Image (cartoon, rainbow, N blue to C red; front, top):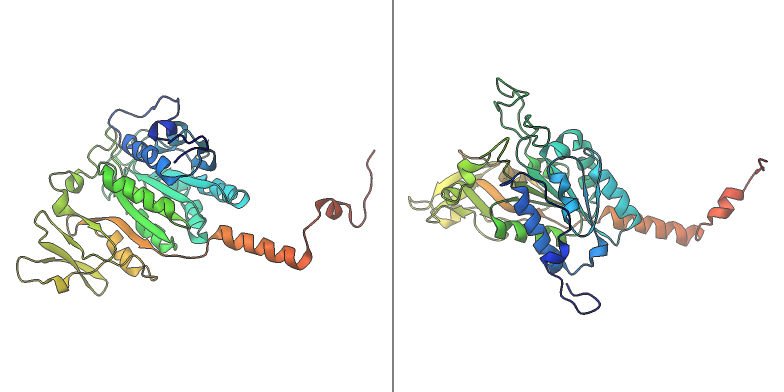
Length: 339
């Protein structure tokens, strides 16, 4: 963006003076870098941008952005963001959370901001572990995960963040990968421009407590055959030779081999605009080794936002009853003076 003085802002203008205090090699660095790179491209004044976080390693991000920010309490960032948007709908609000902060203690709060379609951008860092508190299993940890709090393996079934978001009605749902920087910044940009709640899950590595969480399918050497990028209007094709596709058989996704008789007609064409989120949910739940893991925008539909509906209610009330007078309200009826 360009300031009133004609100065073109760059990433450096969105970098704060705070020392970044994450472990060397953490995936958070990549997400921070792409977020800082994106900010000047949004053409929004820094004073109109707010980053709100809860508790966790990811939640230090507001310190590192040269914008307004609020490092809030565990799991409650969506609640604070809702209040801020209700009082200042002109602000561009980002919610930074993680698999523990957002899906455990904060699950109910994340649920409501998405079902209400508050106009904010939610970025959930998913490293499948509690990193800040030193390596306990989280709501997204795989079944059988051995950690300090599950020494013989977790018996909890993991939650899929994107499936959760789709289930509660989020109007924009996407997934990206910390080490795929081009895809990450492109996905964040689309989320930032969406009107309503945009939810982005970022698969992110914790190299201290859960190193290699996604290596078996996200490593660059194997990624083409084990991940698939979904793109609106394009067939679901993947593989180093682009010789595999995804076919939907009812509500079941299956891999077809285009080199062994399957035709392009067998491959599903991705449509992010479908109102019913069933297909998007199928994509969100695809998992390696049975199926490739999907990244990209799974759903992007337009609904009225909570912010706009609330403003319309206020305008309707004012047109019917006039602009309220607080002083008159406080002094109506029986009043008394306390000496």
